[in-house]
Image 1: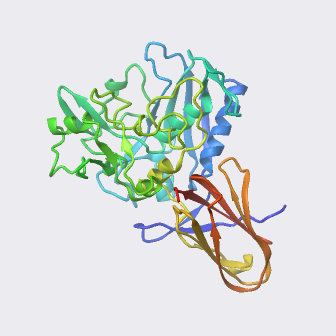
Image 2 (image 1 turned 90 degrees about the vertical axis):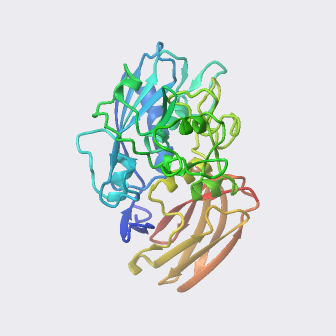
Image 3 (image 1 turned 135 degrees about the vertical axis):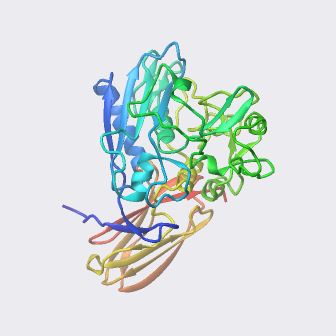
Length: 401
């Protein structure tokens, strides 16, 4: 059967405990698709599952349907929940798939975690080789974008009658489309993503002691082209600068405040997936370091920056990989309980080998190995540490040297 599968114990900051972590699995309910489209859907979700850890399947309802009158490539409705057990922040809306991952139990049985609508009236490219024609929209790119919204890359910002607000969105705002689950009364509360939005003076936009909700002051911030994201992992992935958020002079519901700035991350940039526009021929089959950092900021469980503890019967008791994100060097430290060959491999997001840093027999005890990463470009990577009876996989983010 090859390598045995390990269960990794991931210790999450703020939860005061541990969860059994495994790569997330998706359950898809698709309507209006065919075998070719379904294959592109499967390929897209396989990409994302590399970066997400959850013991609860992520339930996605995909509607491939005409939307000519509405205009967009796609629209996503994340199912939401607040104040659930182990919620990182009270009074904050989290997508149910994230809440399930944090809590370790399914909090929304018989409901999808997100409803994704994709416009069947457009000219799509359903291949997975990143080679659409100039007039074709790349389906994988757009679906990855929409799923990331469903994972929590989403603001609840709104402008109406001269007032900006958080947590005042209603079903009417998105008519005639509507999700399969009840649209919640948001009660004026922000999303987990919103908690990290600041202006150029680093004033937190959800701080009601500074910005009344709703208010003209918030509208000014939402339309001032100076909104930034100040989560620690998102900032680290942006070379220690706050990623800029889309906040043009004219507020566009579904575009403003809920994307990365189009000009800061143009087509072709590794972090362009979550900008508001995707032109025909544009391709991005990776979330990008900034998006992955943001998802971690809002609470997605991740094995990347913690020590993994496993049983001695596997021949390894612990593994640490740091720093992460990294620049020019990383350190791996592991404790073996018996002599065995250990191989350390770096792969890109598509599973292709970039580097093999170590492949030799190690004696029992603590091992600390240092690796220069100058040959790796900025981006996302998968580190695999493989022994005789184990394989431990970790996500790495490289920022510029």
